[in-house]
Image (cartoon, rainbow, N blue to C red; front, side):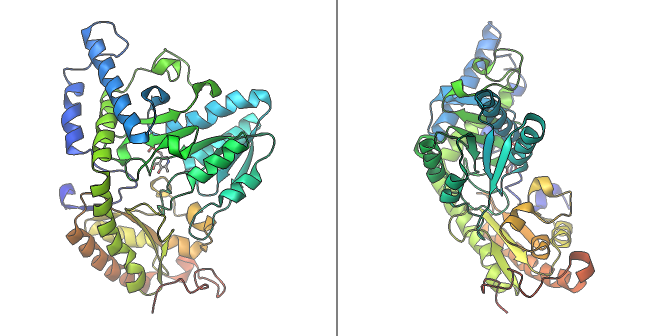
Length: 408
Ligand SMILES: Cc1ncc(COP(=O)(O)O)c(C=O)c1O
């Protein structure tokens, strides 16, 4: 099947470059190729374009342009935030970090590295069955040597939104820095970093119409950070390396377009999401993983018990439909999702969960077609999914208790 005839429903993994963004970046790949550090006209042109993008991105996030550092994406922004804060704060004896149990690997692995290699102490705060963190539990984890708390704005697997404002407020009261991984939220829900009150906020362009390999870190006050990357004086000396000008220009334009279209995109996504949310009632032994209301407008994570998710995703792929298997970063491994396990799902239930994430251009017709196909596919896969393959749930498994699992 030709690639352009596929129905793509994995926008939390990545999405296409917005057509208006593609138009704007083309000259930066050909004629406007200058190095922003160069003094001649071609360099000044690139410099101006980078600064314009900084202003556009700042408008999306509600901060001052000078509070943004461009990075190679969400992973680098998260690394910079955590390592930068740690290498600065650890010198003063503050080595304790607090994160939620459902953070992206770019946060979890960075904290684990700091723990194993640099003597950080790490506390992971649990989530409830909808994937939400209780801010009071976060505050209860704070100690006198706590340096930073990092809780994501929206989860990549379930779309569950976290109470990041309340967490930032509690962190400020305890003298703790707060970082928010906003990679899945920025450009999809309204973000105002000043209103949230956090110190650091990470974004990634390819999640909202920009290019892969570009992102930004909001830094409320740069004096609290030690910069992990040495080299040139780019980004006001905060992030060395020749700027990815096309990627940065794309980020700025994507931010402008996302802000302009926020309400319309939200409404469009909610319409198609409803089609997939509905499957939790239509397909037997199926439930939705995530918060019923506090959730990204485009994400439905469905557990179709005893239908092996890997087989479902492959069967849909053969028919030209792309949906996600847990998070993109975990999709090569047939391991139950750490996020779903933290929400109380059994191994079996986690192995039977798929993620459908729509985009603003997903049509209702495509959503309804895929929902129908998904229903059929789950039924067929259930016939061939063996207990040896994925195991069985115990009678007291959370999948069966609490009356939340589907309808017969
Ligand atoms: C929540 C979250 N944080 C960070 C990242 C990493 O972003 P990037 O792909 O730009 O490195 C992702 C990517 O999927 C994500 O979903």
